[in-house]
Length: 399
Ligand SMILES: *Cc1c(COP(=O)(O)O)cnc(C)c1O
Image (cartoon, rainbow, N blue to C red; front, side):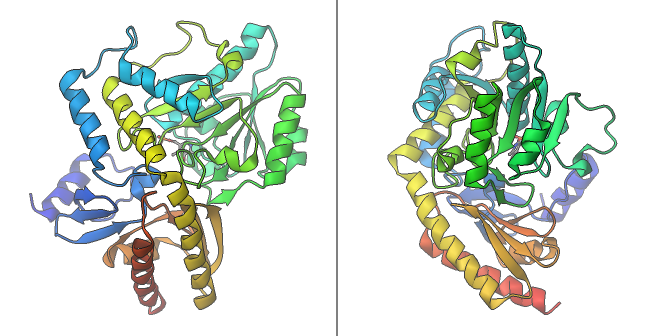
């Protein structure tokens, strides 16, 4: 089909909830993606922090196709080997001792909210309040939306979940004020990504862990966007030298296939008994095999170290842009390969100009340019991205 016809059919038949660029992507290879007009793009978006190993990584492709030939889907009324291997692997590389699998970040958040409440219910304690943060993002389902601290996402959807309070990110006093003897859990991102790439302050995070422990409150850390090496550690919570009670993962977990997970300790896992929560597709063999190949590759090829090293380099490049274009850029924020460049104007037009130069990049919170390259990105590709970005900036400054 011709490009214009695909786009026209897309506009005719797809529910218009996205502002799509008028680009039809056809094929990918590592950090490069090709469109239907044979234009090649350097990928600094990774499908929103999903493709840590880039496109069509051989080990992942093999795991998916071999498993699809052997065993497709069986439901959670039986064990399947890739899923058990994945659960064990995730526990070996994190604080966790038990894993629940689902299909998205929002579902992992739903599971975490339900587990936190049920945990105290089973203990016979009257605790069901959840403290979340202003400017946070946790997903679009009703539960996840209810704990998302951005009114623009919530408006018009009627009654949301009750028992949710919002504190101010990086302000420990606001958390203390919100906490009562009815508080079940505090839910927090290590970096508020959709909110404009705002990392949590280390002192704040440590104090948050301390006061949740002291008050018998569970700490839920949302690592849907930051987990699996993106920040230069396997999990971003490691930067803060704390351990959560519950963690959510998704985006990069299934190496491009839809998968979410909620991870927790043996103790907190006792909140759930058979029948308390479930997912038909959760942890199916194909997705699990992809995730195992993904994580084994991340470990074997030292991908996390590369993310840290290239993240440092990317940051230097972005700091240079602030020096060169102070009228456009004011601050760079982030960790490893999740970096945000604060602009003095809307980021959208520059994002489009980058695409015209062959660079896929994102924005966050209207005025932040968002960099999420694959974790396998090289020095040379960062240099090339900066060349393309500088051309786009030149066009932007011409108006
Ligand atoms: C993307 C995201 C979610 C929601 O994930 P979906 O898979 O889109 O449901 C939740 N939390 C964070 C931090 C995210 O970045």
